[in-house]
Image 1 (tube, chains in turn cyan, yellow):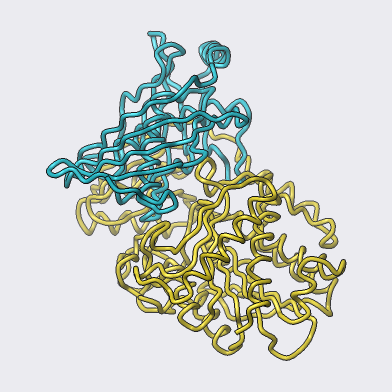
Image 2 (tube, rainbow over the protein chains, first blue to last red):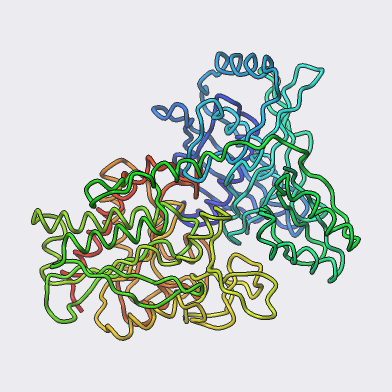
Length: 219
Length: 398
């Protein structure tokens, strides 16, 4: 495995995949994980398999920037195929701040809404996010984390540009459901593309993407 | 309103959909513009236009699906805010609100006020006109002399990168303040001029305010092209058309029909060449928190690589010293991606050794939609880095 400069793009792109996966796994209405620093990166080319990146990341929660948490990640981009998602393994060292209170509050608030929540353009053109929509934005980060993880290659780097539209769908079971249209910005092509993502969330069960549709036919 | 998804299957259908783009009175918002056959087109249709749009599509046999059902129209918060802030017209550059995003007219008004308040330091030059005939203005800051060695700074070449135009406005005021207080860049102005183009892509900027906040390119139309606009940072004559740009007009990195096809680019090329004494050239973008030097179009290192790398290290350290904002630095091709026809590759090849590009805040949390509250901190920290570059140019004259 060869050492990669953290300031060069191959390591940065692999880190973005790891972050997408992590946000999907551990993100929620009260937690938004962000990369504070990419400490080191190595790459290994595995014959007939693909390219594997070994990363050391320092993470922060956007809602709790005073502390950081370390994480190691392995990102394996499979050879050749554009249809197979990278495989990500990660280990978070230590505890993430508990969001139990905030999750419960959010869950209760949304469940008790008379009319289903609907919102557009988060953030708006000026970067504003009304405080009551911040958890919705963080859930969009989790949902787009899934899309980013599933659709990344060594030649892409995705970020959530904006939540174009979100609509809550009331369910008979205990999950909350949000139908999102998110705009993802891809850094290499500079394209901004809409993805429709249905996200289920529950305080104990966490976030799950149940449906996902991208701009290209067959996405 | 509803959001419709259309999948044009043949050229006739594609044309029908494109026709809709011309019908301005329908007030359609294309979330995904027509790009080609078999590629979806997403259109947000306001309620009063629904019947007309559906009739137009149905008459031509174009099938569509309803992506988002009727949703109550929400208050357009950002348009309200623009109205609110424009109602209180600033009387001078001291009452101007630097902590907000502004319209083109407000920025052009700001420039005129700055010149009027400081006629012995600041002048406004018109270096050309955009595709849609908007003036391309450059502010010149000079304490005298004839064609002194100069620094060039441009912001807003990619229109959706709003923190850059906003920072440009702040820089303009800062230069004037430093000069008045005889501190900061006042010493640089003793021997050098500063040129600042704040709204480098006014057509794109206007479009981000009227129609699509995430528009990047110019707004030029070339016959035979399916889509509008050229990436002004792929249109320069440095590795033009090579790997690192797209030949498709629908692409965000479309290089254009030929180098310097865009008046927004040509006007700067003409200015730089006729001035002949520019020593540092800085083109400002967002986002990613990077300081970059050439090349983007080739892996060959520039001859001055080591010096540019050292200046970058110093500039980034100065930037971080203010709020702890972390930047990475390096050549374009190693740090972000291969890009051909880029601004600073051309300026470097013209002999402007200190050619740099910034990618300002943030690293993706807000991206292009950076909260207005971060404008001033971003401008303040970036200014420290700019001063390092300007001072180095002044102290290493060539």
